[in-house]
Length: 449
Image (tube, rainbow, N blue to C red; front, side, top):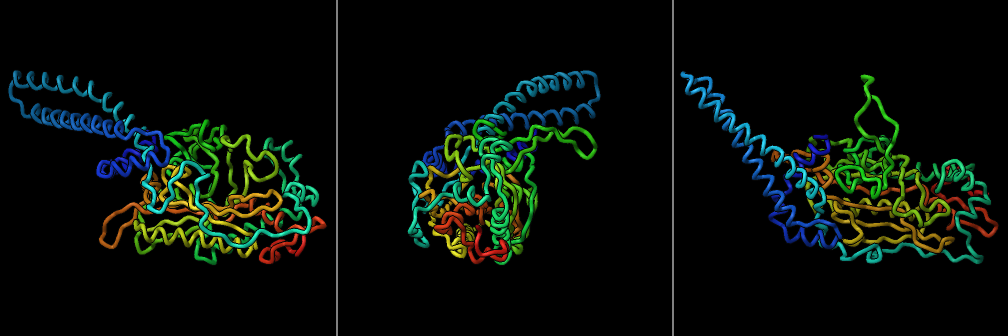
C-alpha cells in the first residue's frame, strides 16, 4: 500500500462515523457542490468492508488459538484435528482477503470524494456566475484618454516580451524585462515584508514535491494524479535517492506554495498553546491550465508559471476562531490592494464553485481598466480538518486530547495580475507608468518609461 493509501486508510476512515451520523447534511453538500458521489454506495461499501474485516479478525484469532493448542496437544489425533481446523481457517482467509481488498479499494475510492459541509453563510449556486459580490473598495479610475492594456504598455516600454516568450517557453510563455523585473520583484518584496509585519513567518518552500503533498492538500481530484483533470505538471525525469537507487516517488511542480507549506507539518503533533501557526511562502508557481486552453490566450493574464506570496494558517479546531482568522487573512490582502491604490472587490464563493474540501471561500478581484474587467488577485479558503486528516496534522488540546488541526490559506499577492493591474491603473497618456508609492523603494524610481 502506498503512503497515500496508508494515510487515507488510517486517517480518513475515522470520518465515516460523522458521515453516518450526518448523512443528510453530507448529501446536501454533495448535491450543492456538484460532486459525482453516491452516498448510499459509500455507506454500503463501508458495511461490506467492515464485515469482511471483522471476519478476517475472527479467523486470525482462531488461527492464533489453534497455534496455541498445537503447542499443548499431547496426542497425534489431537494434532491432526488441529491441523485440519487450521487448514480450514487458512482456506477461509485465502477466500476472504481478496474480497476485503476489493471492498476496501472501493470504499477508499468513494471516501476521498466526500466533501466538507460548507459554512452556513456560503451562498448556494452552480458556478462562478453565482458568487456574491460582498464588498468594494475604490472607484475605477477615469482616464481622459483611451487606456491601453498591459500587452501594449509592456511591449512599448520594453518590459514584457511575449513573442520571444512563446518562442522559448511555448504557449503562454513570456519574458519580464528591465524595469518590469524591478516592478515584479518589488511587488513580491512588498507582499513578503507586509506578511512578516503581520506576524507571519517567511519560508521559501520546495516547488518540486511528492504525490502525498498534492493529494493531502486537495490538488488531486482523486487518489492519484490524473493529467486529464488535475492542472498540475508532473516531472517526467526520474530521480535518485541518497543511496543512489532510482526513486519510486513521482514528482510534481506546485501551483502555489500552499501544499508545500501545509506538508511541512505532515505527521506532526503540535501544542494548542503554539496555535495558530502563521507562515507565508514565496515561490514560483506552475499551472498547466488544461481547463482553460481557449481562455485569455494573449498576454500574461493566464500563464503557466508565475511568482506568488501565499499565506497559510494552522489553527485549533474551532469554527468561530477559524472564520475570524480567515477574515483577518483576507483583510491583509485587502490592505495591500488599498496601499497599492488598486480598486478591488471581494466575492464570497458559492457552493458550486467550491472544491470538495472547502468550508468557506472568498476571492479578491482588482479592476483592470485596459482589459475592462475584474481580475482575480487572491483566493482565501478554509478547510476545517479536511486537509489535516489527509496530511495527518494534529495538536494536543488543553485537556491532553489529540485533535486534527484546522487549515486555512490565502493569496497574499500574485505577481502577474497585480503587475497587470498596476500597469493599467497607473498608465499615463504618454505611455509611461507611475510607480505606486509603496513600491518606489524597490523599483528605485517613481516613473517607468
